[in-house]
Length: 144
Image (cartoon, rainbow, N blue to C red; front, top):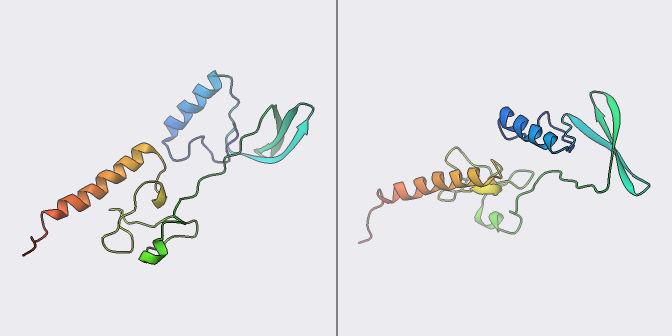
């Protein structure tokens, strides 16, 4: 497992990331952080991956390669432009600390706001948005 960032799971606390890396190493998975893939080539029946780490080039040979280079939000077909909702250069919807977008009354939660792509962060987003909406409902005046 080759990671460009200085720790395996960049968005988690360092101790969590270290624990996961140690678990993987116990399973005989070679974990390299602060490392960059600089080449890939077929080598016999395997695949050789050249890695640059601390200025040195090394090589790992395996049977398969899985490339995961990040995520992109699924906002391109939501019609956010029609609603006037801003997106950043990568397609994420910028929000404030209450998850409000630039359009009053519209919040963005979960993967689309770029603040976390995990179940627990998305659930926390739900709690924030629900509090914003439900707590405000008591302040609304009844229709007459």
